[in-house]
Length: 389
Image (cartoon, rainbow, N blue to C red; front, side):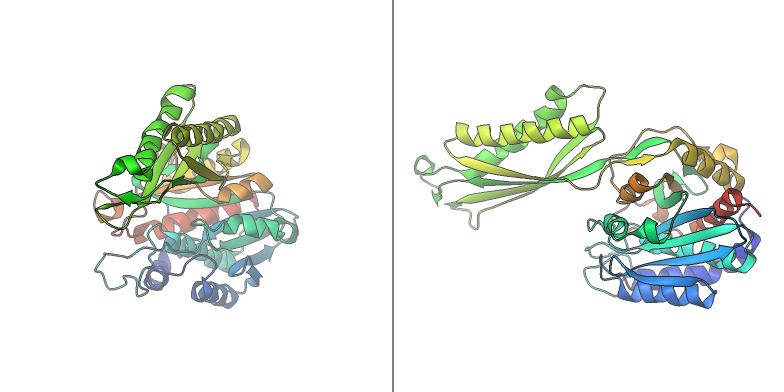
């Protein structure tokens, strides 16, 4: 795999940076330490730094030559609110916080590309290095766009990259069209009539009503949708009661809906309201549904996807670039950037059949440091390819 030699030279330094970020994870919009570290490194390499975008977000600007061409590269910086169970020396030092999605690696890969491009300046145009806060549910990408990201830093195209543990190290998934789903949140409140568990006839049991709702909503995908469309409805939390002999007054259910098409999203929302209301009425009570629309689908633009695949082939080899693959039900707020500018979201493999194949959001996940020079080289080659001297 033709990793850029100069990037390979500072791979040990990049690994140290990645592990330092991993040991000091910060939640969305709280990435003060990470943002400061990124800014200091960019400035040390002579890159212009603009801070305070979406709070802790920042953009590094590197210009060379006289063309008006420009490109944007995005990396996310935040961690997840979960406890790490790894036992290596650089495990999280912040209780209840963990880099379990590889944002520490994404940030480091972009830093590697920035350092190389600042040294070599083998391009003619402007590179914008976008370091984004709060991808994990906070919508930092949306906030950056709303705060004028692309007005202040015009980009002909924008590219993001995410590690993929189930894909082998050295392979990339670069596919045009929808690649990730829309992610919506559902909250259901079931009202009952509490009482003694020995006298259910005097009560209205919200646990029973909630259980019927959980089962009934599964019929939406199996019976209300075109079988050729895709959707996921998952009820992931069910909270009710405080004792084993008390029928509670209220049950709370929370979950997520994943879709690709707006018309499917609309149908699922409408059917959920119908099922929740009617199921509660059938049991002599009431229930309310809150349907909160979240990240839109991540849809890659055809032309930019082809350009990303071309650059990836130069780094990884043509046989290692998957150009056709089914979309996945995960979600990404890079979708907001792709709604504002043409671009592509790249999936790059880190799996090794061992510990670096552990799935995202797992308490034993860890980013594969061998991926750093590959990702940095891909970003760098893409800049040189799209803005040749």
